[in-house]
Image 1 (cartoon, rainbow, N blue to C red):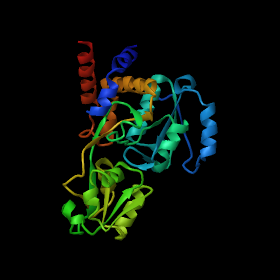
Image 2: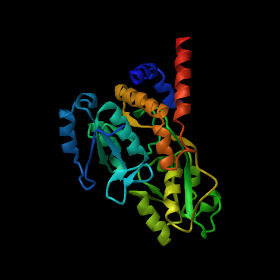
Image 3: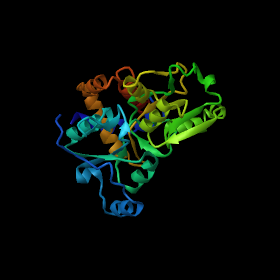
Length: 299
């Protein structure tokens, strides 16, 4: 099949691309959001679990409060751009998709124990290359600041002495603790939240002055809330990719091959349009970069 040939071609190029950036569904199962797996139970499961290819199951870990990438809709079903993309991959492979909501700050334990096969949920690749095996990048993202329109905060300098909220274990938090630490040191406080819905509740109540977050999530959130804005000055630029356990090149190559098929048959662009992400996706450019890397290696 064409996509399998693409998978072989991509094998040597995916790692370089990860560092430089850019159906019909068979069945699906949703793991209850209230189920919390203990470390002991996860360890037991990991020892019994075979590979996804052998089981015909893809277990995707995601933050259930991270629209438009992963969230619960009005019908109580888990959906979003990333989850529908995972569904499309599973349809190509004939796999069952298991949607598993996770606590974001427990994502590494869930992945490394084998409780989930991948993290597929607006997952920033930049700065994490040594910790995961990544798919090709597919969304251009940036970390931004959301404030109330009447807060009198017009730029990053206006955050001095303010309380800024951020999701625990997020790329935004890492950024403010590392590359943007000098800026964060001017804050009165950097307050962590389990999810951005909780942060917005506090922002609306006036308990915090701003939120640092991904631009796609920020745009989605402020559409349903009046009186908020995104500062023009962003914190950085980065990209999203699917994160696999370090060394799981086989599964990464399968997903990469399927993503190329979904790009070629129009499914990827249709989903991007549905979730209003057309201006942010970079999958085509990422595959062009991968092809160029492959040609360079073979010359």
